[in-house]
Image 1 (cartoon, rainbow, N blue to C red):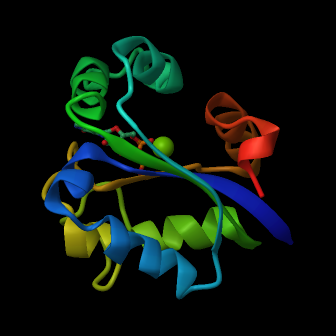
Image 2: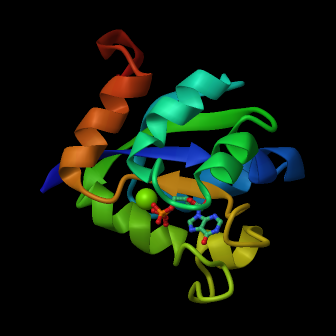
Length: 138
Ligand code: IDP
Ligand code: MG
């Protein structure tokens, strides 16, 4: 099924200068960049985006990390885009991520783990709406 999903290149990967290498993983694996912007998130925006994790012990750290530098936010489009993106990303903890995945290759730790990706089609729709207007997706 043709889907769209939200991807974020997190501050650690942007700071390392691997935006292009990560985008290449998507484009080389059948995911088209339908929307893209580089932004410095505010504490309020990052906090709202990760509100689902509010009760988790790492919520404060996660929000601080996500505002520690600019991020690149993308809408990826393709066949089974949600699952395909999750496969390309690898496990949340880079030490558990399969070889050849983005997190295995570019991430250092479970908190600084290079990328975010929507975990379901429903969340993808909501996350895309959170960050993009209709005219920014083409
Ligand atoms: P995901 O990014 O693979 O979907 P989630 O469980 O949704 O993983 O967690 C969201 C983000 O919160 C992770 O990508 C990671 O940056 C951070 N995180 C998750 N678990 C931990 C933890 O145990 N310690 C610190 N940060 C964590
Ligand atoms: Mg998640």
